[in-house]
Length: 74
Image (cartoon, rainbow, N blue to C red; front, side):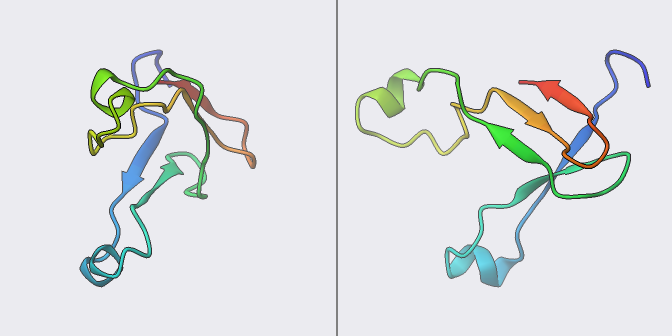
């Protein structure tokens, strides 16, 4: 895989899960299609820092696969 190729894709939740607030979706590995783990080490954005909610995962710093070892910094 080239350095610019995406190693992960985001799986959107179903409409019913989103409505019931059961899931906001998750990342999955392109190679093995397993659910990926995430690290949240980035600082919060200005909107979130002011007690708001930007609606994004602004603190996401890394997505990685425990099964195959793929990793991508965000």
